[in-house]
Image 1 (tube, helix red, strand yellow):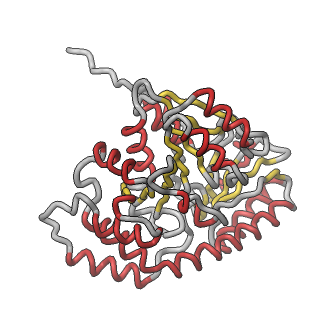
Image 2: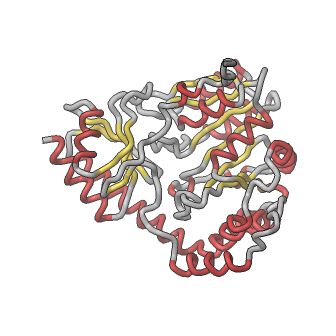
Length: 357
């Protein structure tokens, strides 16, 4: 019998990213919205499903969706790229601007998918380090970029999984450094709606800045898998070369446009979650855990007197699931809790108090 072909990428090295999907009462591990979309939106989606030409391929250019997003961000449709979640956006960026002989810089600890996508696209990974409080010093980050000259620099703001927003002046310093040699600066704003500032207004034809966002978090559409990029037209044109044809299905194209008609409802959900985040932060300050300020819809914490993995397991036994980062370099013994509904958050706090006794 002939030997099996060997995969170029050793998938076993990727196993650390995935979060277990367990059957528990309280799921606070993947930063989903605890609130479903508005009933009017769900009804509109059901009506749209009846009008889709299911026997025909969808609009390959996603013109309607790109036009709707362009209107929201005051850009042209040619400056918008849409994909199946922001992970596919990031993958498309490294397919176009990464690969063999090219590099991408990230600042650890950060979103684990960056390094995974770098490996699967054959892009050399350059890893900068954050401080112990997870802040990122502008001068050291800029120097790393100038020394390494990576083709792509990815900055997650607010940073996942720490919740840290970009410091004042950091984006401007990185843009200047990256632009000095013709690189690309990617601002991953998957949690941008929860923060007070965005880099979306920096996108223009003569700048090297692109901004990635998603419908999964603030739009309560994690199940739809829809993300997008705001970028110069020359960047979007390159992404279209590596995107698979018809990669967005017809119903998804309709769903994205419909969602943009519920901006006020989205903002109301964000306000509720931000208020809950602050209430949760105050409650955690009174427990035997260390926390860090967050500008996202989650909080990173480290138990003071017990191993984080034991705390995670004890919470699971109480039917509460949070994210386990205890073995991730730079996040040893840390757990991340998503901000849920008030009821879910109270159940988490009650379980945590019991576990920490």
